[in-house]
Image 1 (cartoon, rainbow, N blue to C red):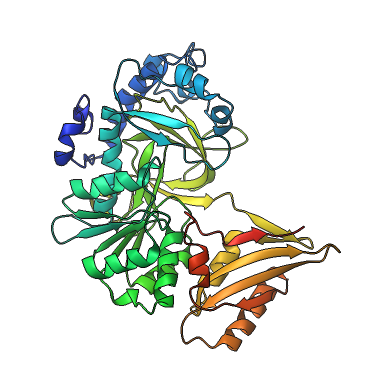
Image 2 (tube, rainbow, N blue to C red; image 1 turned 90 degrees about the vertical axis):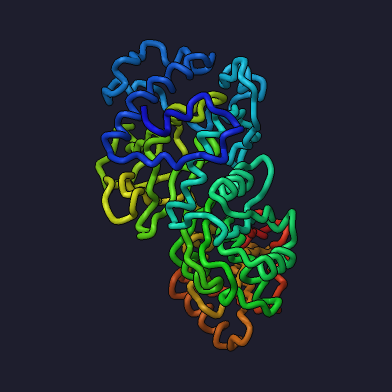
Length: 448
């Protein structure tokens, strides 16, 4: 039995001494997977939804890839098609266990579901959240104080991260997003309480930096030295701008509501170290359903090995397209885990006069420009059918406005073969407009 497995049966009263449980070797991970995948399948068989899908699966042969692949992949569309009643009655497997809390499904489309978590589930889920700090080299204790800017409530990441910080011996400011505590007040707290670690969505970190610039606050000279981001794509341009504006090192983290926090960057920041002792991780060819070779892109499919008492997620297709490579590199104890990178994320785009304007590419172009604080891209159209791009830009204080306007127009033309209308805004306008949004609405289709 591993240190991780020794937690089974423990509940909320023991969070304070929660170990990181990092395996010593790939062989230990294989042993955990071998034992826990059988438990995961047996628990799922308590579900009326899973029972017929698992008929004929031989739990003694789950290490055989052919036998494991007989388990049907679970998709988001299948969950969305369930009524609330069917989800709780047929899918969930609570039995007589007390529910500790409910986590809201992470997707933004369709009716949200609320996943039940038992006390044991939360204990195991907390392991992943505490690992994010250690992976980034944060050892906790009185030398660190955290500021939590992720939304608080039925989306789990905010309160789980705050509790994990406390477990690691760090004080936590439970600020939440700008919708719950205005950004100006968050900046004031950061200035007065001097946290060393900030946690939140990268887009809100950029928003805070924009608001700070509008208020004449210099974040780069402040106390925050480490930023932990999660819940959305973090491009190289976003990372560079965050680090430039905050004067801090940014580490990306990856998780999903259906499983828990599953991966984080280590000191090398050469991809996520994905915790294969907490979940079976598969990267599959979208056409054949077969595993792809190391280094090849495929659909990410995960099976929770722990924390699956309330809702059994077997072979869950997350919607991410990733590339995985074997464990290697220099990330300390976390080097035992394989690395994972996003190869592609479903991205929005505008189509204008036959040209696709990819939102991620446009955002990268804008944030790579040092004179840009923030921006908003709008696709406009009139009754005559004339469409155009309008780019509203907040420049940094002291920027040469006309030079910035000319450079952005040229870069947009060179990159997307379209000539935009550039609108220069006064500092603080977009910061106030984006304030109540969890994720800044930078791309808006205004066509009639």
